[in-house]
Length: 446
Image 1 (cartoon, rainbow, N blue to C red):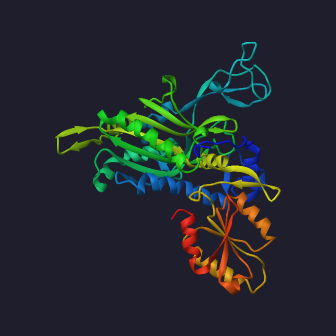
Image 2: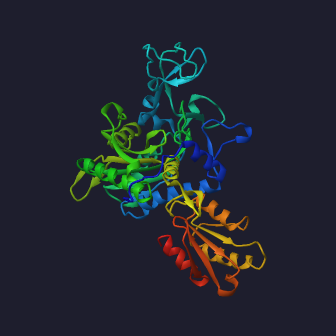
Image 3: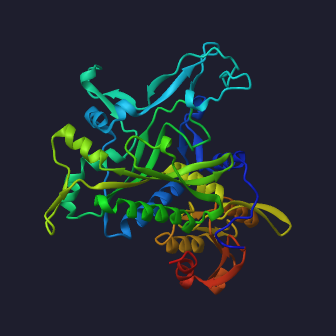
């Protein structure tokens, strides 16, 4: 089978949700109070994996490139930013209310029934209000008085921080187009119909790059980033046949976009967006320049040309990307006549890369097990588990995606060696303790 394709069975979303909660990836937020709709907390495994997803993105987009620098902009921002960017006017959904059951729906998500009329998805009533625009930004107030002079907004995207800091970054980084500004951070959208677990939530994390290019080169760089971003998901373990690149039709394009393509993933409910790559043209820089009175341009000293760069924007959701990696990695097989669940996560994404497992809780074994743990912790994220039978502990580590288990047994006290077990093959090899770090590094890819 081509390693870039998948032949395993289709995963049900309920399996992922159940695993996420049972093993500590994702919990419903405020669950002891009945929950809070469309909000989630990331548990001990989830916070590790989400951090790994973001670190993998940052490594690819910033660390391994010479033409991209980082930024961490404020979440609270001036209303002037959102007026200039068009969000106050254009960042809206058309909403209708059901007069019968009082539920609210996005009008563009409702299709007429066989009778030609639009029905409420909740109660089937056709008594719906006219559609009206609803702005998706969360509004708050900065200061002691709640009036319009103190109005502020939680950012609905991280991108505007890149644009308003364009001159600052250009001056301090001494970069020149083509160059990019990368950011990972929280965004907030008051979605009316969130759902599908963490796919669409009101609070989420984005991984965004704004790549500034000469206008004549925009088409070339748009194609470049479409390919780069698609291959990033493949490199980290998503089969090619679970991904596709879909160009937006003209009626789908945002008001700033000259062209957009989405990297889509085959979720259990169908194709859904992981990342959008957009040619934002010079819309944002010119809009902020006009609103602020500050020139947001680049002057090429070599040619004497002054221009406003075009922007190519790859923008991904960290949380939905993590969910896609979980779904793609979820598998079942048979080991020793028993069915096991296994997450075949790339080691770069796995919550733990290594689990150190003393065969017994007897005091004679624990000092050696903790010695091995101490050797491995500087080179990998490690779990340590000394309870239950060793077979059950192996199954648990398989289910949470740990690539390697290192078992310390009673022979270890004599031969100063441990057993290293591979998650995917279940093969085991005996390795001297003084070589265990070298062995683990080699198996994890460096």
